[in-house]
Image 1 (spheres, one colour):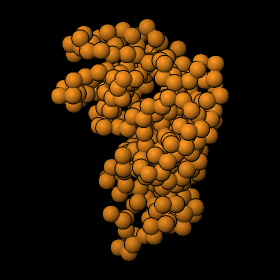
Image 2 (cartoon, each protein chain N blue to C red):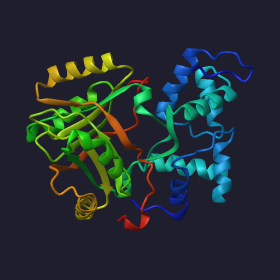
Image 3 (cartoon, rainbow over the protein chains, first blue to last red):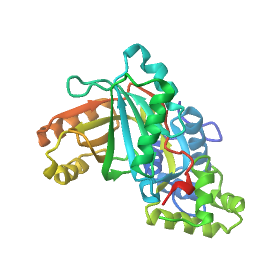
Length: 170
Length: 154
């Protein structure tokens, strides 16, 4: 699914890769950021904008906007809550827990027994530890998870936090 | 860090759906009732003060390339040292200390699965520490663009 130019001709795959590489680093803070990107990648401003729109509609770009560092703002209690849920329930429970307003991420990952028995991960970004633990208590009560083994891994230090650089590397 | 009302509005309105048009910051400035240059200056200063990591797209990881959550069990006194080594490995975009025997958690990305495996093999060999590799099976909610609860913040 190669984006096309306004005229319908193909846009160079290399130029699009260069564009993705630049985009992973962020949108330039210039009055015409898409023109700046165009100049960096050898595309036209229109081609840059239509590639971005197309990637948005295809779902390659999930969202376009301000990417907040929650820790700087004061979200310092970040808990990774992990659960060992019976396989046949993990999907439905994952979908339910994902809807809790304070659950900011929720996904399923494989167990690695014996060291790692957990298969569902929920992230809670909160402003203080006690409040996060209270939210967890609510979650357990609301969804009847009293019998499900779980663990809470608060983060104690962020050594790196940045966007994924799939094509741009380091 | 406490932000003024305009910065808060900027964040409230534009964690998603930043305009894709010739002058996006101009369009945003009209929403906020300030000048285009002020939008740009505010974004720059929010970036400089680490409130924003960037302005830009968040890619869907499963379609953008390969990525994986890994954890290593590190002797407590070596944690900073090992974390620095992990950060030097290619493609590491998140790296946190957490309270567990597996106490260092990081996300590694790569253009494809084979490169990712090679990088992790290399790192595991270098660190000589027990490592968990936990690829995503299914995401139920993966979007950190949640509304900021300004009242709850310190």
